[in-house]
Length: 361
Image (cartoon, rainbow, N blue to C red):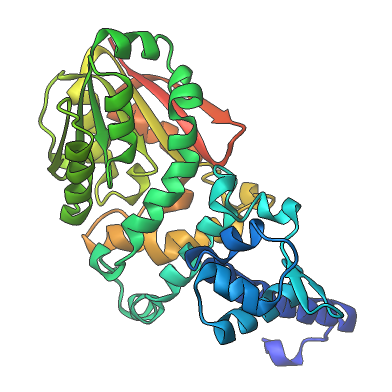
């Protein structure tokens, strides 16, 4: 066999790859700094300011000037912030602010960059899993539910009533009349509490096995006086509620489950005969070659490896991963007892598919 080192090298291809890797390093660094800018409120502050000095920006944001100055260096060289050298003034173009500020929801990409440092924090544990198998537990991700709640506010909350629910025929009318609704993997319960406020005649139940997330959901429900919403710590694979719900939802939750087949079967059993399961999950193909032009291909596989897949494996689970894909999703829904599965997409959400599933009669 000829060793890799002795193979002839296409110099043009090699130089192009070096450029690609340098670009990757710079963009990875910018991702970290964009996350910091989001968390520190710098993009929000700059979006409200005319061109300003680093000192003025730091004062507006209530931050340390030296750190802000270095952050601005990354933002300027990364072509995110513009710089007037004569005036020593920095500005955030409105075209950029439209995708980097909290006011930009549902288009705030800065919020999504938080996943990269969050995942990087478990790199050592992930490398050990590469060597020995197993996985990294949910407890290793202290900010996960916080970041997911913010991301959910963009993909779910911003369009839940006006765009997502209308995907299910008659859902709005049924909720107004009064039905029983369950949300699997409800996290901090923002989606369910929003529905409970909007549809007081319906009854809402949220399940998640994170005690921290359920505690947050209960606090919000109590603060809002939502007597029609309840939250419990529960493994979705152990529902054991026969025909109790007319609508069950799962927002970006099924692929993380340790035993997704058991969860989907439990969901089917918990639905009434005319009930509907509305599942939001990552938009991708189950076949790698069909994801080559995916706009978030590397991001999807990375977040899967460093979170979605590994938390499932940590529980001795199947480890589906975020890129389990539409084909496998439809297959598992059918296997669970859903005979009618429609797959829909929404213009405001480039990340997810929406599956509307009904049981066999």
